Image 1 (cartoon, helix red, strand yellow):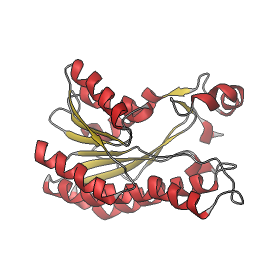
Image 2 (tube, helix red, strand yellow):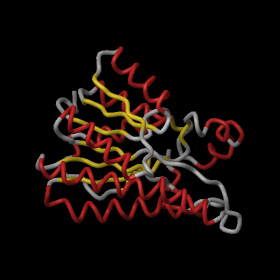
Image 3 (cartoon, helix red, strand yellow):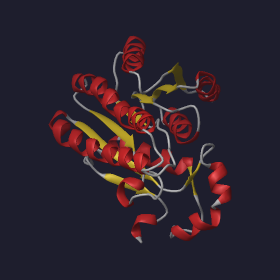
Image 4 (cartoon, one colour):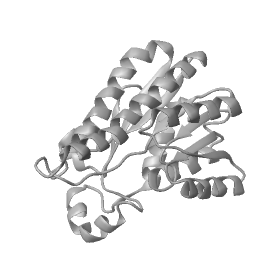
Amino acid sequence: MRLQNKVAIVTGAGSGMGEETAILFAQEGAKVVATDINEDAVKAVVAKITAAGGEAVALKHNVANKEDWENTYKHTTDKYGKLDILVNNAGISLAKDFFDQTEEDWARTYAINVNSIMYGMQYAIPLMEENKGGSIVNISSISALTGMAGAGAYTASKGAVRSITKAAAVDYGKKGIRVNSIHPGYILTPMSAPHMEQFKDYFLSQIALPEIGVAKDIANSVLFLASDEANHITGIELPVDGGVVAK
């Protein structure tokens, strides 16, 4: 029960890494506000949590919309009165190189992958200050550490997540607020499954370990950084990638 009596918001909780994180948080005692733009999907995840005896609520949430963030935080504070943990997991991937992507591609990628982080932290930090502390975990990508061919906007956006995480960690550490980023590598999720099947041999050739990662690997890492076990860790970038960036 590493998150007992904690209140957590997990975005993009309707599938994949967000789903596994929300379920694991509830198992560890957190009251989870699970959000996703796919309302039916996140309701199904919350149904799993409550059926197993956990506590969670589902909210439809477009993370690129500041008003949606305001509504999410109002619902959280009205129901639970505080916020201890924010997991900025929601994001999109765009496989286009610089000459193929449009201004609209760039703007949409940044709206969902970067602006959402800013909005989430702008609302979370004042609530965490009231609590005398809290933990924010932002999901970036190994592309922020190594670059990624054919995905200029995505790589740039995840680099921005890495940088804004460090800036917030420095700015708000004295308030007891820890801010860290996790950098998934080749992780099998419903969104990545078609690519994983097609390019499995290539992905296996890039990692040091013998198997592709799964969403639970990310959830376990988020849990550690969110918990009090990581109370002296802030501003780090944690690759969960099977050793890709070790090469």
